[in-house]
Length: 373
Image 1 (spheres, rainbow, N blue to C red):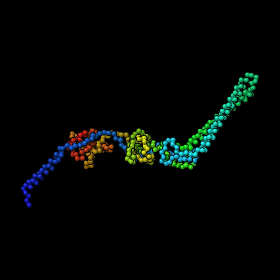
Image 2 (image 1 turned 120 degrees about the horizontal axis):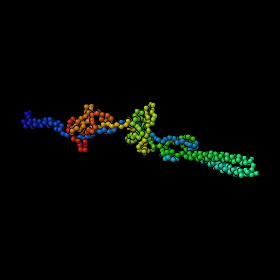
Image 3 (image 1 turned 135 degrees about the vertical axis):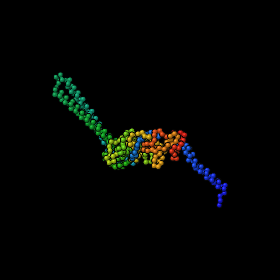
Image 4 (image 1 turned 90 degrees about the vertical axis):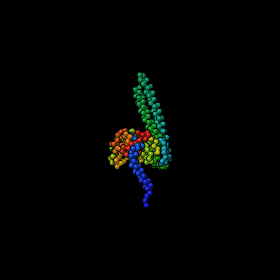
């Protein structure tokens, strides 16, 4: 069926218009400035880190042992109880100890009485000797009596020294009895948590037997076994970042690198002190991942990660030069937060395109957004 002449003319006109638009579209796009955001290539310190698994450890922990042999009258605490320094943990039977203290106190008083008596005897003997000395130039002087008086003074002086020594022994025995009586009440040596209860009321404990095990849950440190060849950047005072299993983060300071190497793992123990002194929420042996620096920081050239695109297997960064987008093939190093280390391909201070670079073409005019560049 023949096409009407008017319809054919209209069809040919539309086809010609499309051809013109198709031919001129790239040219128009080539001349239009693309709106982009830029970020300068800068130099900044880089600290290379490696993740090391650490654990919380208690500065104070251990067994509280009995210091006297006695029967347990009362266990004041249970496993899991938190105690303060000086709180009573357990009470031992003290009737025998109290009686021993009373006996020692009586012996100390008797020894003091002996001292008083010997002092009086010495004073009397000295008085007799002084009286005989006054008669030395008279007819009543008798040398034998003078010698006897001198020996009596010496004997009473020796007896006084012996009485004083006996009194010292008695006072020491009384002090030991008082210590033993005090030790019948076992108290917490530091703030902490009872983790193990070794005895119950009615048990008999000997000298040195364990009563409870405690750990200080407040003063916690972090210990990590760091490869020996990666401890160069760990000097006392170095701050490192750690991540807990729940995702929370904290900072810790290197307190000491233990100068002893594990021959099997070739690691050295490093102790860190959390900057947050309140570590009540953490527990001994809780795991933490530490970002340990390999060495001291160095200055490196960096570019924003958003500026890097991959084209045909190459890392490409567009930089703005004279208002146009210029592609650069770059070689990248380590990651530095939200930036990459640049080994080659860029210069310090160049403006790298970080937004709008996905559709840029080499040499395309660009317009840097307000507040950029």
